[in-house]
Image 1 (cartoon, one colour):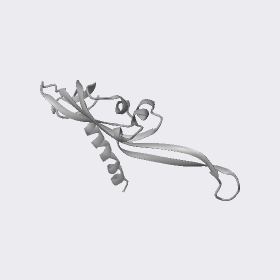
Image 2: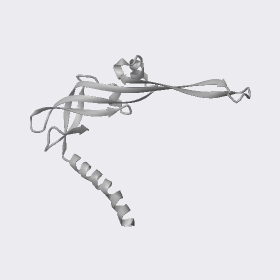
Image 3: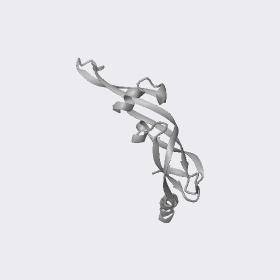
Image 4: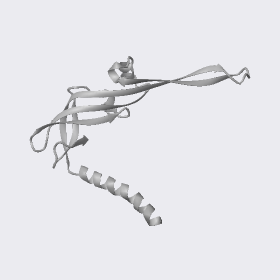
Length: 144
């Protein structure tokens, strides 16, 4: 049975290698951001002192978490969060771009960023963004 277990471990590595091998024929290209679809979950945690429910008369810290989910612009404090980054943001930014492919054709595509990426907060329509374009399939793009 050990050989079966090894083959299950090797298959994901082979798949990863195959997908990375496809990234090798990319050409760096400048793209223009056309629109961005932000989806956010902003999590705010607060700690406060409360009476110990066991009746000891002592105070304990209670952690309270509030979450707001939706399109980032619809969350009231998005501008503050975007500027200060003082709250945990989990979400995605689907950045729609237009670019000239290596074959000379004009293309459009989407690159996705998470709340952990600086681009999630900083990009806006009209910005220039470096992307990688597959030399064989100009519609396949990824982050540079």
